[in-house]
Length: 582
Image (cartoon, rainbow, N blue to C red; front, side, top):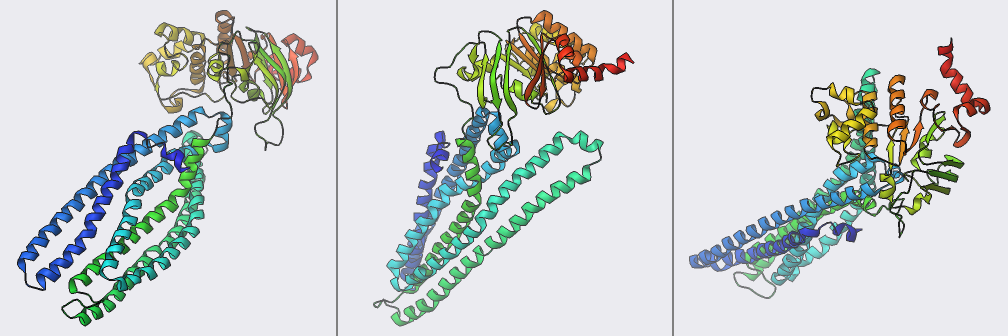
């Protein structure tokens, strides 16, 4: 996992290396300061030698300034490396998400992916910056300060050997307890993000049904869960600081008591095992440095504990393999728009209770218009989503242009298929920007022609800015019917071999629906058209009509044939035309 995440450093390797190197310089300078301080006391103050005080005083100032310079350089380099690492990590994660198929996104969930790309990466960035500084500073300070302390007095330094293991044991116990809590917290963040996304996406429904109080209650419950878990974790982590303070003051008390005896016994000279006043002062400084480094290490330890869950979650994105892969030697051209379902069975996941499609077989010639009818949940959308290989069949074979869809280059196949989904999506930008998703190089004349076919040109020209009208995110400033017609025009600009309309004229009136279908017949006769609809009128002129029921094709044929042979089709037709006949 660490190796994969480390690849995100890339062009920021120099800053990542400079930061710890500068930190080594800072630590070395800081460790020298107590030694110089002891010389000021012993050779200057104790002996009344002002020359020595000035000489070592200038050294003290010089070492302090050098330590400051190294520290600033380390902080700047760490900041540059950390922000760059986070940028690359987000880039790699987002790039990976773009390769995912619907099954990958269904499994991970969109709200979880958003959380991983935002708050999880922010936590990892903070941890990375601490890692390249504190992970070097703490052990370096511990080693250098401890070795310097042992050189001055091995007897007093034994205090560290007793206190440090006890402190380490306490930190490990705290970490083991809080890690599962933080793991749970970040999963709850996914739920919180999902509630917020759902609320904002459906805010008009919330307002219409006066459900603000219920939505606030849902948000409060999940937010309260995060609060409770964080409180529980923070209460445990709060023991970290008292542990450190007890260790620091214990060391200071022991060294003060033993060191004072050693100074008194040695008099003003240095007898075997004795201490001078300056050396005792240095021991106090080293105690502060050693235990201060441990304090920083404990903070770093807490940060690592908190970031373990985000690290694992981002790693899951980076190693997630798309469910669909290109073959080794893919077919790079779709010959025509013919479609063959050969005993196709499909199930969304291994844990699904049953197959969504069962033993579907049908042949569709290139250029045909095929209508698909069926009750809600009869797997109409599932059937057509297999054609551009948004999912792979579980069993059987699906061919487009006489070639199994699994043998095509995925991009080539999907470029040959235009699909207007049930949930029409427009992106923030102008109408032109949205239309050119179908063809980035389309001319203004081609845009207008596609909109005329989709019966969208008239209402577009009614806007003050025409085709330069700004569309809000999700198309919230246009009606449902206008959104559908814009999406149809966008699909037509691809000039596809296969055009799939998944109930995409449900929000337009029957007259406009008829105009759109007539335009399709006259303008794109060579394109295979699959029209999913709830209205019989939308599909009754089709060359072939499929009637879906419980994931199977219950009947197929023309309108006249189905009126004679299919009770389901006849009942739907009669229920929709009864009012007109009366």
